[in-house]
Length: 179
Image (spheres, rainbow, N blue to C red):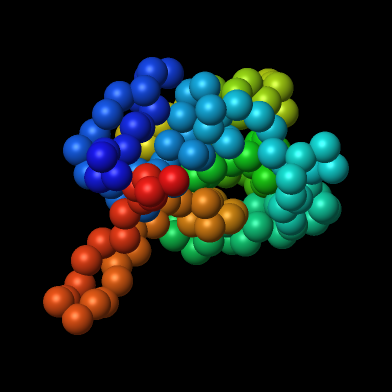
């Protein structure tokens, strides 16, 4: 039956009725614990598939860090967390922390939103010696003021895509074809 797809769930295949949404398909491709692109490898740098600005030059993170520090000062120096969504190898946060080290009272408590256990290990090594807490979802970030970084995070999020046809709108789904 072409309307039945098999979705990988917790390392096993399980049939679902009907095609899955594009967002669910992308989430499995990116974050499945055994097969997901981000969950199973370090895709960054010369040995990976792409490079991001923090990996090209430390100045990117240092400038962002100084920008955050000025924003924090302008807000009256609140007791805040420093957080990053999708921190990659932790390079950006390391550079931010280095650049703000001389800013008296600047937040040193770091929260990283990372779903990949492999990348958490890489980040722990990069940020060794810093006070870091990991969470899997942005909703789990601590309450209170947060100075938030999200470099290229939104580029890799699963998306919902809708198609307009003669009968109206429908969500794009991924399923098996005849072959």
